[in-house]
Image 1 (cartoon, rainbow over the protein chains, first blue to last red):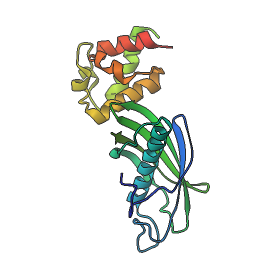
Image 2: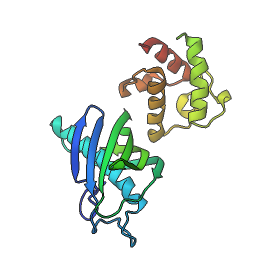
Image 3: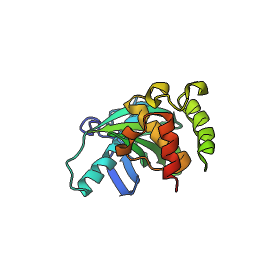
Length: 128
Length: 80
């Protein structure tokens, strides 16, 4: 999960406590995943959720005084995109970390734009 | 929950989650082989057991849970 230009898909961490974090992204015109219709392609939401989880794991490492881990998407399951976000939308994402085994963490991600559910999924991220 | 009740719950649960025949799940069968687990799906096993039985399975304990018999005993001995 690069989290580097040109694929920066998280620009805020609102809070991170226990197994839950909330992140944010302002959808800009120059976002890598914006298509001709001015809306984000579905893979952009997967990347946003994965980077949100990685940012959460990174935050946990910082708090614990550990080196920043590198995260990889291991598996995406039950991904649903209900609305493709438009330029100018403010996305708020809830990440809940589940079981972790040998560096593989199960997590769920849910993206909202205001009250509207934009996307949700289950992922496995591998962090080393 | 008695061991028999655990078995009655675990077998159909894992058969459905991992899409195998319940007949594959026998006490002496090796879990990784019967459920065709890899490093990614191993976390699904831990998640579904933790969620269903409210039993935490630390990664350090996993090497001791090789067969389904081991799993039944682990759940039975770690129930809240």
